[in-house]
Length: 126
Image 1 (cartoon, helix red, strand yellow):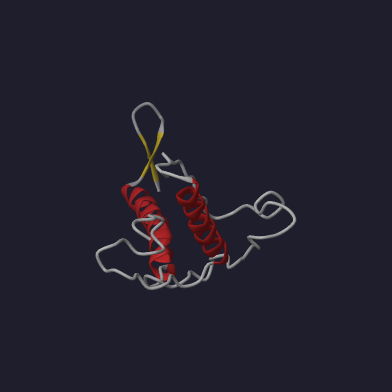
Image 2 (cartoon, rainbow, N blue to C red; image 1 turned 135 degrees about the vertical axis):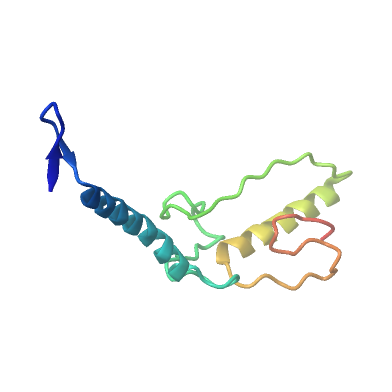
């Protein structure tokens, strides 16, 4: 039911206003309830996660012709290698880590509990 004020303008009734507020509250809580249902335990993949692996070694650079990735990594270095052997060791280590990251899977065990986990992206003293 609507009421007209002294100027003849229709105004909603209190009941209609409360119904509208209730409908908005219900609609607003639906995404929250859905998000709580879809959250998974830490360390498990969401059912919506893409489990795609791209070959690290191949004829073409990975990521150019492949579907858009879910994540990316940027790297910047101040190289402190004292000689060619140190620089080569660094590049081999980076190549191993990048190859591992493109294949996914469980992270290897950390050899020293004082160092960051091997899957953290921090090279540490490895």
